[in-house]
Image (tube, rainbow over the protein chains, first blue to last red):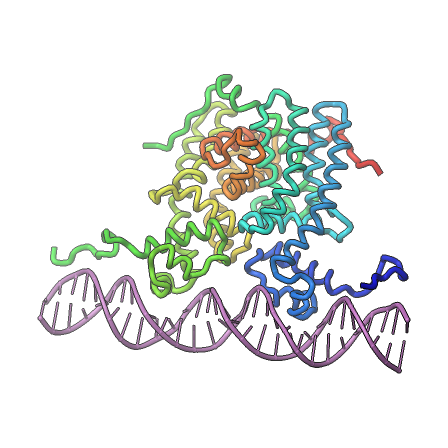
Length: 236
Length: 236
DNA sequence: TGATCTTTTGTACGATAGTACAAATCACAT
DNA sequence: ATGTGATTTGTACTATCGTACAAAAGATCA
């Protein structure tokens, strides 16, 4: 086993392995796992189908490697931003900073891979919807710690809101985040062209603003008795 | 009297066609369109694969029929609830009623089909993530009118918020709604068992409460100048 | 009952899926 | 240059896919 110690680590060969990863990520994120064949991926990467088997053994293995590539850097980036957000003194500002620390890395590049943040997040959204087993496992064991850290940080800013409510609302946040990446065109369509659903900056700002307000909503248990709840029934 | 009404409408036999529809809806909603084979559906329905072809011609035709079954009733139900909600006098109560009118039918039965609401909504979520063409077409031409009606109703309750923001926030609402139906177990897990993500009533209440607050958030354009935005940067 | 229409069954076909594997090719240290 | 391990290619195998279609079975009514 001879490694390559001589030349610098920045080996600059037209790496087929990377091309396959990039093509797979793109195709999976758009069409889902099952709709994309190994041959589709190979063709998009300019590679031979057998090459995929050689590098990743199976199609599942390829997906797993995509996750391995992104989870670490994105988690790290989030931890950094979360740590910085926690240092914000003003409670209101801190809440917004924490939410932003959660949202931003999902849209922007979470690693050195070009524009990989949004694409990988969209991939996660699609895999989640498809109930992909490989994705489910690695996500649960990779992101749950981070999710708990964010939930705790938000709870610190909103001590009067029960943790259960925080969990629900952060779940809604992730759902909104995912959906914004999955069907951005719907925003453009419903706004009759006034908004661009594909604009990451707009999406982030809108999402942060809306989510902060959602987190600040009164807790369910105390909201109910304070004001009567409007009872709506359809006619008849 | 000789001619009895065409047995099509009134027939009450153990309908294989219905069994296939129900099985397909269930399987598609859980595993996605591409992961489920016609044979899987037939087996789950206790039918022969050829029977699926006979009743629905193609797999796409089967999906289309599922949508046709649900879209009408769910839209109708939403319209009824929206009309009732618009009659609420208090502006704050009306907003909540409108949101509830949008959310509730997605969780509960939208038609006479047993418990079909949540299942069909989950199906829509999964098809949306997979970018299914059949679903995309029928959804856009069936639900966009309703979506606009809700957006307008919400805008009426919040005249000071630009329509663009309303669109974004209602988009987030749908994303949160979808995600709650796709991975309810995540709520249970992150709350460490304190919340049940599968409980429709809890989901509705949490979602309505959070969303109403999100809609009531200040508009983006006016929020920015009023308070300084906390700028967060990770330590370099 | 027999005739006719609807529905279900069984089977088969062509296409494509994931993957295995041997041969060919490349990269590179010696 | 040459040998060696890493990579790429080409091909093939088996399984399963969606769908077609003829035959069997069931239902309906003169």
